[in-house]
Structure formats: C-alpha cells, structure tokens
Image 1 (cartoon, chains in turn orange, cyan):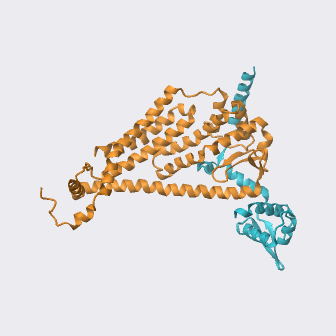
Image 2 (tube, one colour):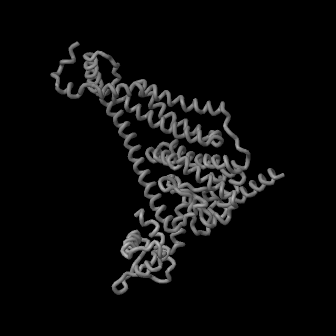
Image 3 (tube, rainbow over the protein chains, first blue to last red):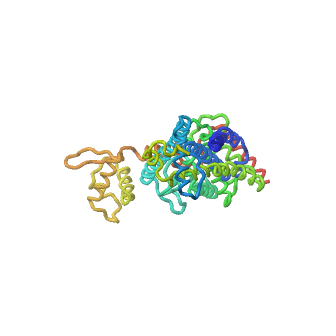
Length: 329
Length: 122
C-alpha cells in the first residue's frame, strides 16, 4: 500500500511540480542535450510511476519463499484475501483500470503518431522527388522557389532540402553552417525525440507538463543542432544564416513575446556558455533520485508479478477446491 | 513504386514543359533517349501518376492526352507551404531551420547581430 501511494504520489508530483520547475530553469539552454534527457526521463518516470502504482494495487505483496508448499499456500491465500474483501477487490480493479488505461493510451498514441509521421514523410518524399533535384556537391535536394527555406526530412531516405532562394541569399560559409545544423538533426535523430514527447502529450492531453515537455524538446533539439554546428562553424556565421533565411519570408503576424527562433539567434550572439560540471552533476542527481525511487518501489510489485506468474494456477486452485479447505488454520 | 522514381520525375518534367496535353507516345519520344524506355513502361508509370492525381487526362480519339493536374509552381508552393507550417515539424516528420518571425523581430535581431559583428571585428 505504501509503495502504491508513493508511486502514485511521485507520478503526480513530477507532473505537477517538476514540469513547471524545469520550465523556468535557465540551464537547459546552456546544455540542451542534458535538458532533453531530463525532460524525457522525468516524463517517462512520471508515467511509469503511475503504471507501477496500478500494478502494486492489483497484486498482493507475497513474500518469496523457497518452500514450495508454503509458497502455494501463501499464493492462493493471499490472492483470496485480496479479492475476497470488497475493498481489496475494488482496489485491485482500480489498479488494473489504471494500468490498462495508461498502457492503452500509450500504445494507441504511439501507433497513431508513428502512422501519421510515416504518411506525412512518404507524401512529402514523393512530391520532393518529382519537384526537387539532387545536388550531390551540397548533399541536399534543391527546389526552385523564391522563398528561402531550409529543412530536413528525417528517417529512411533522409535528406536536407534547400530552396534556390535560400542558396541565393546565403554565402558559402553561412550555407555550410546551415547544412551542418540540419545534418545534426538527421544524425542525432531529433525527430524521434520530438515524436516521443508528442506521444506522451497526445496520450495524456490533460497533463500540462507533457505539453510543456513537447514544447521544450522541440526548442532544445534546435539548440542542440546549433551547438553541433558550432563545433565546425562560427556562431555569428550561423546566426547570420538563420536570420537571412527568416528575413526572406513573407512577414508573419507579430507574435508578441518573440519567437523561439529569435531566442536561438540571440543565444548565438554571445560566446557559448557551457554548464559547469558541478551543476551538471546536480541535475543528473535530481533526475536519478526519482528514477531510483521508482526502481526501488517497483521492485516489490515486479517480484510479486513474477510470483503470480509462477503461482501454480491460483484461480483454478481456488475455484476447484472445496470451500473451506484453506480456511482452517 | 521505388524503381520508377526517376522515371516518374522525368515524365513529370516532360508533361510540365509541354505546351498542351500530350499522348503517351509523345511523352516517350520527349524523354531522354537513354536509357531507352519501352512504351509499356512509360504507359505504366503515366498510369501510376494519373492514379496518384499528379496527371489528368482527356480522351482524344483512340488515345488519352495527359496534362499536369497543377503547375510545378503550385506543387512547389503547396509542398513548401507544408514545410512552413508549425504543425508538421511538431510531429518530427520534418525539421525546419527557422520558424516564421514578425518583421519587427527580424529587424531587432538584425540590429543586434550587426552590433555583435562590429564589436567582434573591432
């Protein structure tokens, strides 16, 4: 029971308090990859905590024993005890409901997101093949178009796409920096990180933390790709490249506070600030905490699950026995 | 579908650059001569493009005449319009270099970038 409460509390706490706290933190901008890892790990732990919490409700905690006779007795007795009282049965049903609900939503939304992405990519790839032309020297496909645009199509048949207007408005070094940014997206499979965050957001739309996680991952993968490009290119060159592509667009309505792309350009204007090792460790410890707690609390239900699986047909035993056989001490 | 990828693109090029709707025979004649394509191959791929909605056709005597459903520019605009929207890259289906910005934001960033460049240059 304690494990159940702790797990459910941890899941709720991470979603309710962890999300807003992390969203206000400034350090992810300095260490975007760590930021992505923290967002996705904490989101995953929050969901898994609730899932395991449900599991602990359905299973009686049976101590493991090596004595087979005791084991069988305990097994049947415990399960009987759990399911014979209305409260025990109700708890078990609620736990099963939580588990099925969470796992079901996750599975459904994973399939939905995967199908969606595959369809979009396939449609785009077909059109691109007919309209674009390969430029092997550039390592990109080029489309005749008078609006500058640069993007990449990840996954199988991955490629970088540039419009002729983008080529015209960028100098050689700027173009190289932009291509390095896109290549970093493809190489690090940033699309999968975004998709993972999207699955959680879609599966549990009533949890604001997952919407924030998705937002932040979308933003942080851009910073990570910028940082990767900075390993071989100058920061002001990259900033210039990004700004020139943005400036050639038909103007968008003013969005008020400023776009996240604007924040990226501003970040490139000052020398790169890295996260110190001490603070990095602190962050890692903050993530490891909930992870370990979950692992520890889940160990009990996990062993109980093994127990029930190895349990010699408890339902058959209970159903097949004469009533009262196990009731006498 | 894969093996015809290149031929699909070549056929669309021919149809797009044709002044009027053309027959399969004409498509075949205007394709690059090597590799030499069999008439039936061209016919198959034209049919694929028709079924995908890229080509439209009208009967002319015994043969069909084919025309592009939309101009190349229309397709390009549609394709890139898609690449420009926020919804597609939020699924990770594709990742854009930069999202749309307001004019005032671009101007502010331009000023800041110029300042940073001169500062470093000096």
